[in-house]
Image (cartoon, one colour):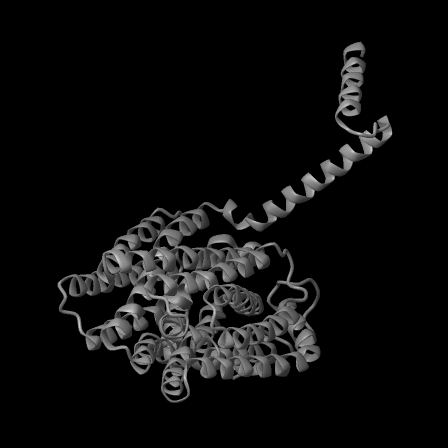
Length: 471
């Protein structure tokens, strides 16, 4: 007791000496309690943000994907710059973007069926392996200086076919790794990882392209796939039990489309995603033109611009990761879509490099918040045996519409210029946000009914509401 009293007296004396106004013992105690509460709250928020990482399988997935995605972004930037350096054509930039993503629109329904019928782990291992082989081919052709634009287009289209099967399986596999209780956090952390790589990859690619050329970026991407494949092979999962499905694959696809069309909240989110993918997201296809012709930079400037959008997207994903519930996500989708459109319009008018860099941060932040929130709600509203097919339609709307938008953007930019094309895309995003906001009252009611039916919210499903589509 004497020692404790002595320590308290020393503390008060030191506080009195170091501060211009001495604090009373009660004030010191109250200040200490407040600081403790703040630290505890901060610790809880940090723990909640990364709660999906308590699952060993997700840890392996997260680490491997982080390395692999840095390589993927390096290849995306280097490929766009290679096409632009070889041709100087905005139209061919659009063609390459179209070829790389239109297979997702065509083949994603088959990818969804595969994700709901086969082991998602094995599907993802197969798609990642084929992606590595395609990156090796592109690296060899480029380093040998024999690559042509048409070979780039063919390889981009081949990778698009692989992605049509990879995206639904990989997204649905998140729930298999962490369960439904941590699925929202896993989706947000997956988006954070994707966009963390988006910050590093373009910046590194911009430097490497200027220093040693595009071919080594493609080679680095090929090597990076080893990390994610190794992580997938090291996972310990319950034995896969093949579902007892008696209908044909085409009937399985039709069942998925019926679910999407009959469930209005699901349909509304997917239509909005299709709108921004067609009209607004192709701004990234035109980024080499902004970097070179408008902002008078080069490959390094291109990498910085793409990295700025990635930095904003990383912030958007982390914002979602801090959430622990689904309430209010519909409103977030509407607001972030509108903010995306406004930010794009402001960016399109900028002719100062660093102002453009700053404006791309809210562009990336808002579009990532919208797409990740939509992904979260779509998976939460879908039953486990339907999740792959719903995410296949998500892939069609999000990535599958983008190539049509890329081709449209490249054609428009050729006639009216890149800035006006991006501005029109921003206007389209704002109009889509207004339409979605007006549907929010019905969205909330029907969305909650779907969440109850899928077990993601407490309560009894209202009569007539089911997560199974009617025939």
